[in-house]
Image 1 (cartoon, rainbow, N blue to C red):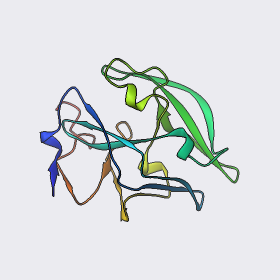
Image 2 (image 1 turned 90 degrees about the vertical axis):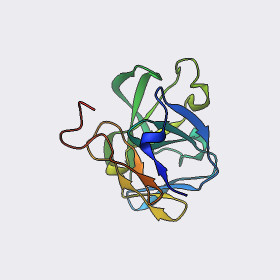
Image 3 (image 1 turned 60 degrees about the vertical axis):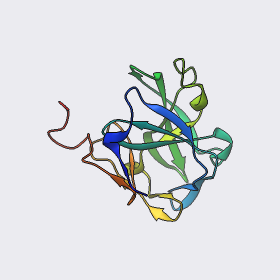
Length: 154
């Protein structure tokens, strides 16, 4: 079944997924879970949030970066550090999300463009263009997608 990002709601919706989410960085697996939450928002590919217990121990270090989402609240960023290689602000979380987004409390989202590879089930993810939204594009998601050059006014 194919989903169009133009059928996703605004404000965004959070929903659990049992699809297998895997992330590789520094040549090793740092996430492997079937307990993610996905956030769906008009014009954006899904963003997957994984439980902190499903992230490999010791690969996350706090980053001072903060951003504000009008829907989810204040995002805190994390560096991914594997074998001495630091990927700055490569993941983010909401320690105290806004009302309606409690399911993603402390869960981690990762920019697929900064990882070696990200997978939904066994499909390699294509990163959403740009470096702001962090959406995961798979063959069952259709656009056009916000994030690329010339799309900021959508």
